[in-house]
Image (cartoon, rainbow, N blue to C red; front, side):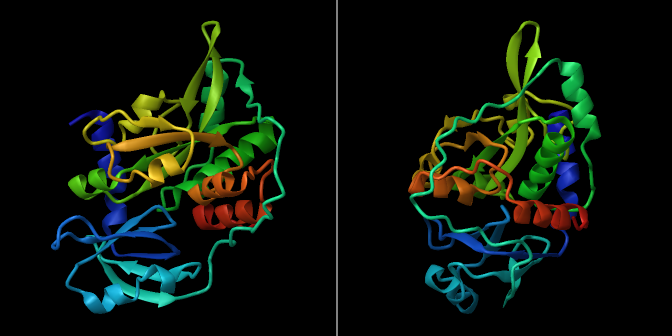
Length: 281
């Protein structure tokens, strides 16, 4: 096993304990065979499971019953759902935006002058060993780099296909982290700044291989629907976006309405601090 793969597995161990999440239901995958476990894709990024014979619990997950609602989901150490209760949102709801509100200005990320400076920013980023949601960590890191250094970073999403999730019993359907542009040896390079799972700025493939247990290359996409419409094709996808993106829902909104965020949503920032670092702004 590769060193980084082992590191990822070790850091994932706490997530295997009994887990409670306040989240919404993003999608449900019933599988291709009658005995396939039902996958419940949560907006937190987690993949929970229900046995197909558990008809009582499955009846609660009909999308028309769960759409837009928040739940406290309890999972056992194998990520099977053992409890489901309606609740109020822990994090701010997505702000609805009219379809005529479109941002036309081009987003221009900062180019960091050297790899040494990028490493300095990486070391400055706050780390918390607690289990937290990746989009909240990414939001705090991006926000603080912008606040403290006027750094306009980007974000990179990796989406895991249903085939990959089922083959490896994988616990997430997406992961997100900031990435930056750095001047190195006379050219601009892209490096992921995932303070939770990396030791420094990482090349894209090095970063995706932390999570891809088969080292599969991830197809680069430009629209969320390139993943959503082909959830069984390939192993993984990656998508670039700007630093204001919070969750995949933002990219769905961009595609449906042509709206792109051009500033930080401070409700999302405050929610990110609270969930990831137990801190109120």
